[in-house]
Length: 330
Image (cartoon, rainbow, N blue to C red; front, side):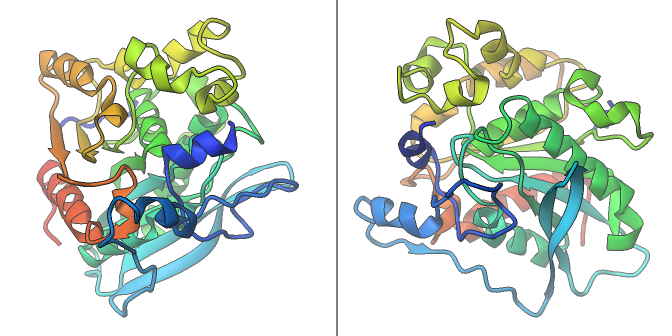
């Protein structure tokens, strides 16, 4: 493979589900109530056989919680790290930075904990991160944060048994879009304020897009993301499409596809509206000979990663892609 060194709250809740609140996951004076349990109450009506996935940590996984990965003045952003307990000495594992969903304005890092645990069981070191939401800091602050998390993982690679040359960035829904944009803008310093102060790269070698859109500017995307008075995207950008057209374009991962772009896995639900821009992006990547893979889990809600029976199948698809692209065998 190629390595590059380079809201409305109601709409947010409809866009994506998240999990149990953490006191470290929210800034002061904001009540973030968007949990997996709240989302489950809606999704179970259409999918009666689902259950909220467990976040219990098994004996073969090491959990390290509330690690500060970046500071902005007094504001600390934190991550939870999941590692294989039986990791081989001297054999570093690839790392993954996971970005949660929530319509850019809500959610918690713990909603991807069940998937992170499955990846750790398979030999990967996975971080689930808190990032600044739109009510605290608008676009592109979240991109800055994710790049800072990748840089933290690379900086602490030896401490946690991570291969610094094999780091993926992934996310679900809004987090999938953020992860895609983070990976597609490797080495673009305007998205990475820390780059001028650090020699450590924030580049991601793979992207895992779980039901996140790829193009804000398309008519289909704006049909859902630019609804007057209800647009989560407009809150993140600080204005609707007509007012902030340049930002809506700039935040669309598809416009950065080039010969050094990382390979990408699109892991999708059965809900087509969350795949906007995917096929066009895949076509662009094909021109440059860059690997992309599309996997759709049948008969699934948008927020399938929150529930059984889909956590293990979803994790299995991610692990297969990581193994193939990183040529890694735990």
